[in-house]
Length: 500
Image (tube, rainbow, N blue to C red; front, side, top):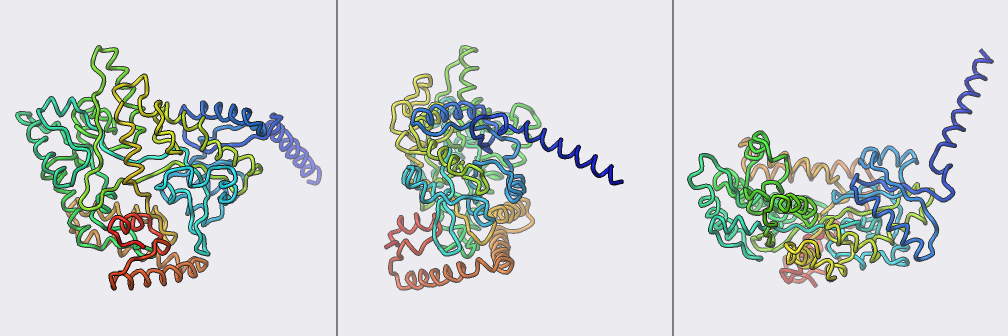
C-alpha cells in the first residue's frame, strides 16, 4: 500500500508539473491577462488596438486574452471566491458593480482612476450608478469604467410612414400623442388585411414609463420600494390597453404568433426592415444589424433603409434609461496594476473611435460623439442625423438605473416581472400588481438586513436622511442633492426645482 501511495504521488506531481508547463503564462514571456467578456467579433480587434496603444505610450508589454466561457455571474462568483477568475470582468447594468463589491470581488479603482484619467468625469454623467458602489460607510467609490453605453430612443422607418400616408412622429412627444398617432397608424396600415400585420412600435420601456409619471422604483435613499402608487396602476392599465385593445404594440401572444409563422426570429430589426414595425425602441448598437440588412438591400437593388429618430414619449418627466457594459478589475488578479491600463485604454481616443466606427453603442467618452466620424459615417449616409440623436438623449434626458444596496436587482426584476405578468393574464388587478411587487421587494430588504448585519449602520444612516428629506418636502423646502442617493430622484428633483 505504501508503494501505491508513492506511485500516486509521483504521478500527480508529474501531472501538476505538466499542467503548469502547459499554462499560457508558462509559455509566454510577458504577463498574461484575461478579459472576461462576451463573444463579440470586435473583441480581437480591440485587443490589437490595446496592444498598439500600450506600445505607443511605452507601457509594459501585456498579453491580453479573451475569456468568453466564464462571462456568467455564477461562474464569476465561484471562480472569484476560489481565487482563479479572470483579471478584467465586463459588468452589465443589473447592479453587478454593487453586488460584486458586497461580496468582496472587485478592486476599488477610485484613486488610480483619477490618476490615470478614467474617473467618472471622463464618461457620461448618467453612467455613474453602474460604475460606483455605495460602501458600508456611506461613500460612493468607483469600481468600473464603461466599455460602451446605451440610451434608448425610437428608430423610425420613414418609408413605412410614407407608405401608409401617416405623418412622421415628432422628436419630442407625450404619451397622449404617442397613443393618438399609434391608433391612427394601425387602423390605416391594417385596413382590409385578413389579420393584423403592422404595428406602430415594437414596444415601450416600462421602466422609463414609470419614471415619466414621476414615480421611482425606490425612495430617495434606496431604503424602500415605492411602486405602490396609483399612478403605477394607471400606467399599467394603459400599457395593457396598447397591446390588447389598441394593438399599437404587439403583445406576448402576438410575438409568439410571429415567431411561429417564421421570419420573426425573436428580433425586432427584421420587422423594422420589412416595415411591419414602424418604429423600434433601441440603443445605437441596433445599427450593427441594420447595416447588414442594407448590404442585402444593395444586392437586391433596393434603396437603403430610410431612418429617422424620435425621443421616448413621456407623461410628465422626459427620460430614457441609461445602461452600460463596464470593465472592472478582479480583486484576486495577479496583475491588478497592469489590468488598470486596460481601463485607462477604454477612455482613450483609439478605443473610443473604434466604438464610433463599429456603432457598438455609444463610446465611453461623450467627447467623441462630436467627431465627424461619429456624426457622418462615410459608408452609411442613410444614418446621418441618427447618431447625434442617440448622443443627445444620453446627454439630456438619460438617467441611470436604480440599485438599492439592500436588495439584489435580480430579486426586484423577478418580483416586478411576476407581478406584471399576473396582471396581464388577469389574475390580479393593476393596483394589486403594484402592491405585490412593493411588498415583496420591501420584505426582501428586511431579510437582507437580518442576514447581513454589516449593512444595518448604513441603512440606519440612510433612514435618517430619508426622514430629513420627508420633513423638508412637507414644509415645501428644497432638499440638498447630497441627501439623495437614487439617480431617478436626483434627476427628478432638479427637473421639478425641488433640489437645493
